[in-house]
Structure formats: C-alpha cells, structure tokens
Length: 274
Length: 317
Ligand SMILES: Cc1cc2nc3c(=O)[nH]c(=O)nc-3n(C[C@H](O)[C@H](O)[C@H](O)COP(=O)(O)OP(=O)(O)OC[C@H]3O[C@@H](n4cnc5c(N)ncnc54)[C@H](O)[C@@H]3O)c2cc1C
Ligand SMILES: Cc1cc2nc3c(=O)[nH]c(=O)nc-3n(C[C@H](O)[C@H](O)[C@H](O)COP(=O)(O)O)c2cc1C
Ligand code: FES
Image (cartoon, rainbow over all chains, first blue to last red; front, side, top):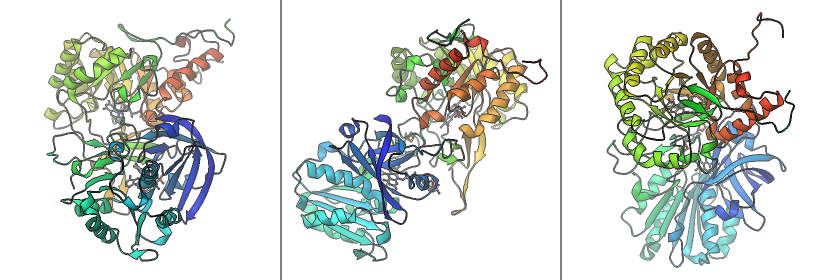
C-alpha cells in the first residue's frame, strides 16, 4: 500500500455521468497491485475539508510499462462530481492499493472463469480479466457477463467486444434492452452456468447488492466456487474506523464482523449470510 | 537569542506526575485502531502517545451497520464501542505496541463504576502502559442509562473508583454534550484525575430524504472532524481556565496550525482523530509542523508557547 499524489494523465467521458481517469503511479503501485483491490481517492478541491473523507474506487486497469493505472467512476454525489472535472496535470491524493483482491492462488489455468459485473462493478472485474489473460488463460475459457440499467451506464464495452472477437465469452444485458439482450444478468448467467458447470468454474461477481444476492442464489448448490466483491461506506479503507463492517454467515449476533475494506472487498460466497 | 536554523526545539510536555511525552501529539481513541493498523504509515514511537480503541472487560460487538456517514466537514459515527476486550488486548495487541516503542494510553469504558475499576486493576499489573484514559461518555446502566459524563457527581464517583485501583496516570475524557463542561471538569479533577482530555464527539443525526429513514442504524451518532473544531477550541479554552490540571485538546485537528491553536488556548497536548482516516501519516506531519513553527518563532521549548493567547484588555502587545 502506498500514499502518494498521482498526476492525472487523462480523463475520458464515457457517457453522461460516467468517466475514466488515468493516473500516474508512484513507481511501485503496479508491482503491489492485486486485481480486485481498490484505492482511496482524496478529493483534491477539498481544501476546506469538504468533502472530508477519501472515496473508494476499484482499480480497473494497470498499465505496467507506463506506471499508470485507471479508474472508472460514476458520478453519484459530491465527491464524484468534483472528480469528474479533473484535468490532466492535476494531482490527486491516492491511498492504495487496499483490500485483499481476488484469490490469485486459485486463478491459474486450466479451468473456466465466469465474471459477472453489474454497472461500475466492471471496473473491479476488468482488472481480473487482465490478470487471467496475462496468466495465459485461453480467452475461450473466460466469460464475462455484464449488466446495466441501460446502454448509457456501460463502460469498457468496446474493449470487451474486441476481446469477444478473440474468443472471450461476452454476454451483455441491459434492463431496458438498449444494448445487448433485454433483462437482468441472471438470464444469461443461468444459461452459462448450465453450459459450464461440468468444468467446475470459478465465479466472480461485483456490482449492486441485489445482483450479488442473485448470483449467490444461482450458484448455490452448483459445482462452482463463487466470490463476491462488496461495497460499503468507508471512512478509512484500511481497518482503522470499523465503519465498513458487514455480517458473516452463521452470525448469531455475538460474533465479530467482516471488515469490507480489510477482510474484503472480495469474499467467498460461503462466508456471507445470503 | 535563538535565530532560525537547526536549533532543536524541546517538544516535551508533562501531563501528569509520571507522564512526560516526547511531543504533544497523540492519536485519539477509536480512530487509531490498536495502533498496529498505522504501523505501515509511520513510526509509532514518534508519536507523543497513542490512545487505543476503547477497551471493555469483555469483547463488545458494537452496532449494526450503517455505522458511519459523512457530513459537511466531518462525519457521524455509531460504531458502538466495538472492541476485542481487555484480555485479548493484553494478549494480542499490547506486546506489539511495546515492541514498537509506542507510548500507550489505554482508553477504558464500562457500564458501571465497578467495570471501570476492574479494568483499572487489570491494567495496573501490566508493563508498557503509560496512562489510562477514562471514557465517561457512556451510559451508566444502573442510573437508567444516563451518561456518566453528563453529571458531575456520577463522573467524580467513577473517577474516584478508578483512582482507588491504580497508580497509573489518569486522563478523564469529557463529553461536550453537557450544559457546562467546566462543572464536570472541576468535579473529575477534584476526584483525582491527573489530566483531562476533551472533546469527545457531539451527538448528531442524519436522515435520508429519499428513503425517509435515518442513515445510521443506531439513529444517532457522534459528530467529529473539522466541523467540530470551534466547539472543541471553546471547550478547551473554558476548561483550561477552570482547572489546574493539564488539558488535552481534541476535535477536528487537521493540521499543525489547528494543533497550535489548541496549544495557544492552553492545551498541554492534542489528539488527532478523524483526520487519521484521511491521511494516516498526519500525526507525524503535525509533530514536524509544530516543531517547524516553534523554531521559526524562536521558541526553545514548547512551554513558552502553550497558553500564550493574547486576550483583549490583557495589556498591549
Ligand atoms: C471497494 C469499493 C470499490 C468501489 N469501486 C467503484 C468504482 O470502481 N467506480 C465507481 O464509480 N464507484 C465505486 N465505488 C463506489 C464509490 O465509492 C461511491 O460511489 C463514491 O464514494 C460516492 O462518492 P460521492 O462523494 O460522489 O457520493 P456521496 O455524496 O458521498 O454520496 C452520494 C449518495 O450515495 C450514498 N452513498 C455513498 N456511499 C454509499 C455506499 N457505500 N452505500 C450506499 N450508499 C452510499 C450517499 O448517502 C448519497 O446518497 C466503490 C466502493 C467501494 C467500497
Ligand atoms: C470512528 C470513531 C470512533 C471513536 N471511538 C471512540 C472510543 O472508542 N472511545 C473514545 O473515547 N472516543 C472515541 N471517538 C472519539 C474520538 O476519540 C475524538 O474524541 C473525536 O472524534 C473528536 O476528535 P476528531 O474531530 O479529531 O475526530 C471515536 C471517534 C470516531 C470518529
Ligand atoms: S473503512 Fe475503516 S475499517 Fe473499513
């Protein structure tokens, strides 16, 4: 984990309210990064301490040779509104990479991997997809199911469609049908699970809570191992405030909590109460 | 005359007969974990002291989430004093802190004076504890949940009960959620508290207009961060005037300038809480900032600066 100011290299508007920002590392960021980890981003304009706290964002991509990394951000409130106006050359306070990341020990070919992303959850899973490709995983054994409310909320689709042409199983669903098939990710995921279950796939999911619950339900009892990346309100991002906790499975009300920032954000589905 | 340059400024402060800190910067309880969480960011031995999370006799689970929400220039928290309990603290956390060379102040809380006294008796036997900080912003279960810290008599009885069990230096941490904080300050100082620390968080609330629900599962929470600094500064100023024991200023400190303001009104030391979350290395940066300022001011020791506030009508400058 590093604490540094990152120079904004570029920012790209993807759709109304969604943008990507490419930041300079500090020379060691890329070496330390594990896919699925996040950074706490300081809000640069907050000279008068408002907004005060840093905001957590997944690291979507690391460009090792350039020592740069990229975040994909959806504007939802005060902090993200300020970040949306970042300009190249500006400095952004970065704390990270933080969190456990995806279980790399399991992520060795051969085998099949299913990634299920909802909305900006793609940011976290894109870093995993990159990792699998670097490990020499055949694209044919990787599947990415991406869902969003509408086409306007999709990021990295061109990149994924490009990989699809090279063999990635890429399934796209929007709730309003404006792109890909109409409906939730659960429909394409159900088909994929049925087709791939014999290979005992690893399933990774990141996105809104209702989607994560649905992924849990769909994979429960099947021959697959499921991991979910959670979100929570965070004040510190490194285990100091105890603000981000979530309930464990088999929690009778006396035991301890899971810290999303430190024990997670990635948890085996079996650890969670749904 | 000392001019600018490399001259060393003596930052030592004394908070109690047996409690001298190498500098006045302390991390605040509940914002610094058990110290270990910050070891990657700074040398714990460089802090004046660190205050642990509030420790109780038995492990405490704390409140359900949602536990935190950001508010203008600050945050509300309702962690609910989650902690691993004194036994696990002594076995798992204290040895590491000792090894790191940290000056450790243990923050304690309970539901009755007997709980606090029992904790003091246990901690008294340990080596590597510099002082106890008594969190009196807790409900007294026997008194129908009224907080110890809101009643001078209850607060004084609590401090006296702890005092009987230990010779460790005692710091009593005051709540600002009272009509006159100096009443409580005088009462606990008279009951044997060597030092006072203030302020704890201010009670607050946040609601969500969209869902029409309270944001925190606990409904209310404690407000902290830069938003509370003026309230804290006022409280520290008042208490410094009211008592003869050293006072530790806490509340919204985000820079060396903020820390120096508390020292100016008479605080002998300061604690930094919420801003550790934003910048985990802030405590050592504040130590350096204080030293730099005092050197530039030509001070040889911090004692020359503490309480040097120029009040109107107190003579020409
Ligand atoms: C590990 C992790 C990874 C993340 N990765 C990404 C990412 O890659 N891209 C991305 O766009 N976002 C990501 N997020 C979410 C992102 O952190 C928030 O959207 C951001 O903090 C909002 O900041 P803001 O200042 O704009 O909103 P605020 O003004 O703080 O809040 C806007 C609204 O959202 C509510 N809110 C804020 N945080 C939460 C929360 N955690 N749960 C429920 N309600 C909340 C607020 O109450 C308010 O109503 C991630 C979060 C976590 C924990
Ligand atoms: C998340 C959080 C947890 C806290 N837990 C405790 C605690 O366990 N015991 C205690 O005495 N004070 C606790 N406090 C209060 C702080 O120690 C401090 O008094 C207060 O936050 C004001 O300082 P600040 O504005 O610098 O944060 C807590 C504060 C926060 C933000
Ligand atoms: S965000 Fe502070 S402990 Fe997880």
